[in-house]
Image (cartoon, rainbow, N blue to C red; front, side, top):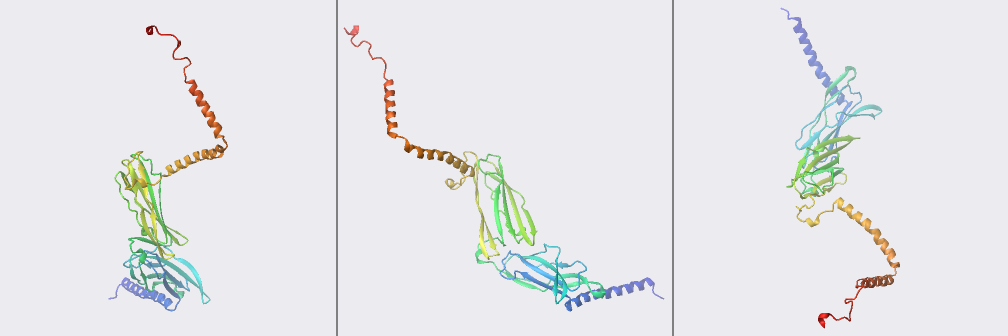
Length: 363
């Protein structure tokens, strides 16, 4: 009995599929063994790395043929490392190698060590599709080499619980109104902005909000932004807090410090948000430990400057013209005026109209 034709056709198709799949893999392997398909990787920087610092893993794939399909990287998972692929596309260039033009794909991964120690990044699986000559387009998997590096916490950051390791880092705050002359029910909005380069917004610290009795704080969820401009990543974290006055008083919003490891200079710095005093009510009772050491508000400073500007011309004119006035003559004239006023105060008639007359009762 002869087998059905459809079974024969299915059997032949399976044989062809089994033979063609390894052929594609062998073609990629052959291109790689013949140095017509190359893979290289490096860490930037490779030494003097601080926990939290950005390290770039650059993978280059080059061929003297051309890529016929998309390249895909399988990101490994390593304990203690945050590995991100922020660029979804490679940077394509061409190079002249031995008088022959090569096509190069440059992939960049961002690595952030979260602790001290030694780390090993295993080989990355790279699926490529390139032209294989007479065989047409071939597809297969390449592997980058494993890389190692160390992350060390500097001694100057020994007492820091959190820091930002970046080439630039700023911390600033602003209010939507001057926090003085407030009344019960008034609200002010405070905005704190953290900004750093060559890092991610999730690496920036949060802002600690202290609840003060009489001044209620209502924080909003933080806003995280990551932007890239010409290969430079800029991270921003924006914190907004609304404060509502519940009773009159003086309130101190405390200062806060933030540690920064400058990756350009290899030095640590301390950034601070200064303390701010909030004044509610005209006769507010101070809630500070030392109310006499309060800061001068901008409004008080402007009033003082305005008063000084109005009084200064009077002193200048007095200093200029008083030396020309004859003070002796002015004194004599004032004495004469005083004598005249004294004479006017005397009665026009004597106390007795007839001084020689004797009263009848006195006879």
